[in-house]
Each structure stands twice: as C-alpha cells, then as structure tokens.
Image 1 (cartoon, rainbow, N blue to C red):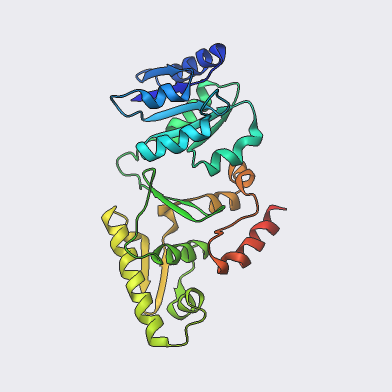
Image 2 (image 1 turned 120 degrees about the vertical axis):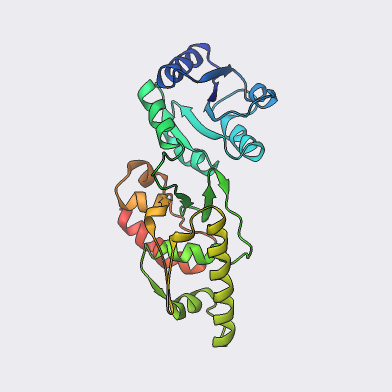
Length: 262
C-alpha cells in the first residue's frame, strides 16, 4: 500500500507520517511539503493521500480535485486544524476528514472505512444526497447509459427502501407528461438501464422489482442521508441545507431533512 502525506509544516508532517506508520506498518509512506510535488511524482498510484488543506501554492482542496481526475480510486483524506472546513472538504469530494492533532487511531479508522470488502462482505454503492445527488463505485462516478436513470435511482434512494408503484415514479419524473403509454415506455427503459448498470458492477441483486413495483435493498448502499438519520455526527454536520439539489421533486424531502436536523 502506498500512502502520500502532505503538510507544509515540518513538525506536522513528521507527526502525520508517524501516525500513518503506526496505523499501517506495512505501508510505504511518501512525504511532501507541497501539493505540486505530490502531483508531479510518477510511478505507482497512491492508495491514500492524507493532506493538509492550507498549503502554499495549490491547496489541499485543489489537490484533491486534480488527484481524483487523474486517479479516481485514490482516497483523499483531509487533515486540518480547522473543523469548520468540513463542508469544503466534502464539496471537494474528499473521502475522509481528520482534525489535528493526528493520531494513529484516527488514521486507522479512515483506512478501515475504505478498506476493500473482505471475503463474504457486501460491497456498497457510495451515494451522496447532500448538495447534488452523486453516485460513486469504488471511488469513481457511476456512469449510466441514460441521463435520467440517475434520477430514477435518486428517487428510490429518497424513498428509503419503500417499494414504489410504477405510476408514482412516472408521475414524479415526468409531471408534465399526460401520455401514460409514453411514461411507461420511458420508465421501462430507465429500469432496464439501471439494472444493467448495476449488473456490470456486481450489484444486480440491489434492485427489487415486482409486478408494477420497484425498490432497493438498502444494505447495498452507503448514503450520507441515511447516516444522518442514524445520528452520525459527521453526516449531520455535512448537511448545509441542500438535498439532491438538481431535482425539483426533492424539495419536499429537503424540508423534512432540515426539520430533522433542527
């Protein structure tokens, strides 16, 4: 396992490397005091990047964006003395967040959380509902054959495991459409694309389909919204008032989320 450690303060960088070394004794740890140096390093792709947010030149947030474009599977964990930057870290699509002082235990938590599924464990689809709705598989965006398939998945995620009637789904996705046959055809196409997409990553059993009904098995989903409902402090603090922002029908649920968080 290859891990990058990035901090411009020598004492903090030393402490970060020490914590990583204690948490993952077998890992190769490469230290940098600049983000640009980490990006310029060739060779093996890092499995994890633990980086400070405030860096001279390119900051940690910009580094995360560029690292994700180059190496989508690399996990970027932000390390900072400023917990108020948690939202910025989440918006930058970071994979974790540690508040200084760094400890080996906190590093180990991040490594364990993102470790590949052990034999017999179910891998999960990573779903972000806060802000814009996004779906990731093994750190990379999940690509659908049809644009609106993602919206269908968002609706099923929003319903939290409830098996929904096809008529209900169609009326929500195409509220201005009056031709029932057209809506049925569109929905069949989206369901086919959703099942085909999930089948390609080994999650074909995630979709529940019965006559005229559709739902999801939630044990195959790791979702910030669900974690917030379970009382996870990180998920609660990550919500900043936007929920599936690209979908107008999600406004009602956004109100419920805001009410719950109060």
